[in-house]
Length: 519
Image 1 (cartoon, helix red, strand yellow):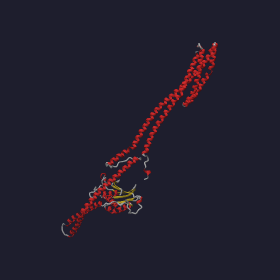
Image 2 (tube, one colour):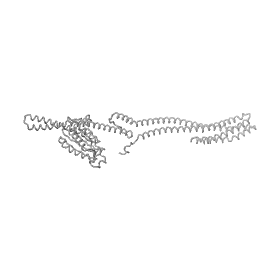
Image 3 (cartoon, helix red, strand yellow):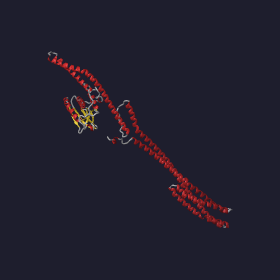
Image 4 (spheres, one colour):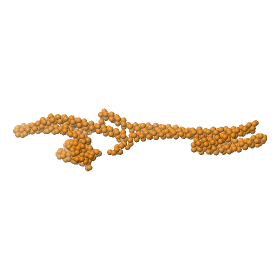
């Protein structure tokens, strides 16, 4: 399998980075909005403080001067010292001209330089109105000269007419300045209201964005915690395994490194459990072998002597007359059968004691299975059963020891035959599944209950009334020594299936000579 195929599609580092990036983006959005809101508030403050306020102050001064002039003009007829009033009016008119210049500069230069687009549009309009007022007042000096000339000559009618004309100009200018100030004040109020509304909106927006950022941070924290949760499970699982708990557990599918680590850890536990079971089985079989070798050594020679003596007695009785000869012959036959049974048991124990390590070779499993089935066919058919073989096409070579595989398969074939004392079909199938060559042996007997099925490979366990209970234990030992597996399963439709899975031979193993061994 290539590295690209085993690499996780979405790594933990990438997911954590994306989660952190989402949090940073949310925080940056909140911070950016706050900066924009503060900048806009600062612009509003600058526009008011450095733009509108100076214009309003100069316009207020101009209005105050204009109002004073209008009031003085209205009171000239009642003045006892017209010449002092003339000096005061000249001074105020000069100051008013200076105020017009300062106000115009504030409107045309200061206000547009710090104002918004709407303010820059408004400033020329206000300046134009201010110019019109100043143009209106350009002729008041001539009227002042005419007024004081009439006062000096004592022309009462000329004084009244001039005062009427002059008052109309001054009051009209005062009114227009008041309108101009009101328009400027409305703009200031509108800007202040807009700034206050923007500030409130900014406060609410910042509060909402802060809440969203907090929510995003919380969600991201929970997401990262969920991503890292399998680490705690793997740690707990490792501690449980260290305490000896090798029970296989289900692993939720995941495409990240921690999920793969959890899956790989469970595979390791399966391997350790299998290795431990194989080691325990080997220890048991080794103990059985030692015991069998000792017991067989002690009883085999006496059994042989007993069998020889029984045969000699049978020969002696064959020639001797007597009425009780038939009964004695039957007794000797029974003794002989028991001696043969004990010899068979001794051979079974010796087979366990002498089981060597398999010599692994790259072989055609289908050919070997076919030979074994043909060898056992007569024995199976003699018991009223039938045997059939199904071999898939294009099977790859497998690694196995032919002699030991023969022993294992013969055990399973005899077991299938014995499961159907009344006869029935024995089906053998050979196929490739994944990286294994699979051999299925099915019978249609009464089946094996679930509580017993888990114990059928244990040494000395047997569901039959006779036998050593070592056949299936030896079979499992042989198969697992090959690096394969053997399982007992219920067959669909009734009966039992024993399945052997042997590893496929590597490509380099198939090109050598037939008897080249592999470590």
